[in-house]
Length: 283
Image 1: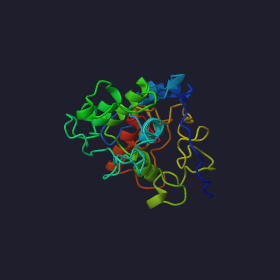
Image 2: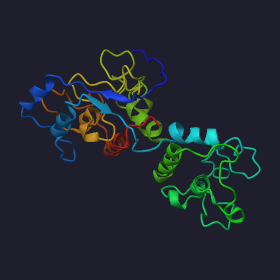
Image 3: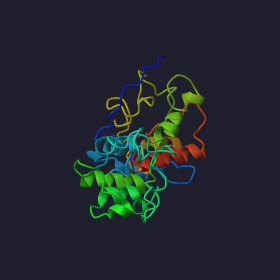
Image 4: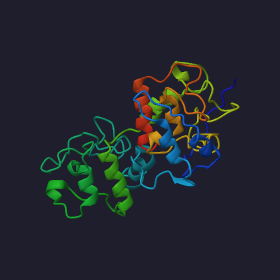
């Protein structure tokens, strides 16, 4: 077995879900699988089947830092707010506890907004005040931002607000948790995870869980059963989650997974479910 290095994944805008004869077969099989929580796995999968084209996300459940927010800072802020800037607010490293913006006190001490970015609360964040308002009192809140270039667009403001409302995260959900569950395709356990021992690049069957965002072999393609492997925002309609959570599978949907390794533990199941519920982001 040979592991092929990851390519740069591009999660497709559209997830094609094919309707197949498996729908008819399952409708008459009468079998129902259950998850450890006692949920019926068949109705959710059946509901997802029959959708010709699924919109992955026009307004994502969560705004990712790398995908949406970092480009805003790069385009509108970093020319002034770089590592050597005099005001010691560095938006090339927004999570830095000494120079960043997340949870840092506002240097304009007379302002009503005492913290630059309050995770979960855009209205309390001085950053939002500075980029949204144009009528600031210079001696209380300083000047509106950015200086000498066009203001943020409505889309940029919405993304920035959503990122803060979602907790101003570093985008570690997939790389820090899901990737470890899936594995690297080299070995079982540890960095090998619980999936990629079989689901690796070049395997005879898909998906490739060492590169789940690959448009040709990743999770975007429908399964052999006609069900979408992942429905962003809906774990209960996602075959991936159904197969790892179910104690038994309905006839025609194969076996529970992983096949050659211990089942996902409750913490791993919760993490996987949360990731799909948040839109299955690469961030």
